[in-house]
Structures are given as structure tokens and as C-alpha cells.
Length: 232
Image (cartoon, rainbow, N blue to C red):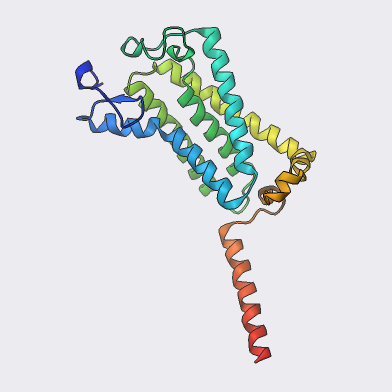
């Protein structure tokens, strides 16, 4: 570990994450630690651009997982490493490190989307699915490493967090599939405000890859061109 002298550590921009600006790995770990925030921004953009309910469903799962994380922290009351023992307020829950919320977030992310890759996406080959799951696992492990390297958590705390998150992600995928199958999501989509915002669940009812969407576009374009030629 490179983080030794307190006077060398500075917060990264407007975040609370302390790192050593002279250490490239430390800087990389900062961005890995911020990956959950980047992913939340991605979810928001995904929803705004596509009006799909899927990112809302996923964020709901992350929120449930976060509540479970806070419950475990309050019950276990496991302190952070000595280097960041004073992290958070004296009576706040942030001073506890078991399980790591960052590792759990990424574990949930990996567990949920690994389930989608393996069970939902049929156009991928077995090798492509393995690569996709490996990338998700690698991201989770990298974020966990960053929390240990920056000394916000112990190795055991991130292992527990990642494992718990991965398990929750798989079970949430199963739960979200069930509520879709029984029509609860469709019931929500029929709410007037939801219909007014044109929110849909084509991810579930008529899933299409980019290649399929592009093929549809090309066919419609060709039909329009042929119709214009006939009219001329």
C-alpha cells in the first residue's frame, strides 16, 4: 500500500475520497470507487433516453440492497480500518465498514446483469456470455480492491459485501421476473402519469438487439423509398 503519510492525502475534487495524487494506482482506485455513482448516472440517462422501466426496476433493487447494507452495518457495528477509523460522524452509521456498500453495489450489479446475460439474452453465444459475466465480475473485484487499497475497508468487509450483493442481485432478478410474469409491472405502466410519460417495458415484451432495431429501420426505409418510386 502506498497511502502512508496523512499530509499527502487530499480529497478527490468535490468528493470525500482521500487519495495520494502522486500514486497512479491511488488515482485509479478513486475512479473505481466512484463507479457506482457513474452507473447511477447511466441508469438515469438510460431511462430519460429510452423511457424504459427496466432502469427504474434495477435502481429499485439497488435501493433495497442499500437498506439491507445499512441494517447489517447497524447490527454488526464492525469498524473500518484504523486508517479511516474516524470516517463519518462519531455517532453515524458511516463509521462502520461491514459490509462494504461499494462492494455490495457492484456485487448486486454483477449478479443482476449476469443473470440477464445468462437467462434473458438469447442471441449471444456461450463464449460471449462467459466474457460478459467475466467483465461484470472483474468490475466488482476491481471496485472491491479499490476500497481496500484506499484503506476504507478490510479485505473481509469487501468480500462479504461483494458476496452479499451478488446473491441479492440474483434473487432480485428472479423477483423482478416474477412480478413481470404476474402483471404487476404492466399494472404500473397503465397508471395515467406513466402512460403520459410514454414509459414502456419493451425490454420484457418485445426485446430487440441493436441489430434487430437497425434491420427494422432499414426495412421501413426501403418500403418508404419503394412507395415514393411508385408514386413518381
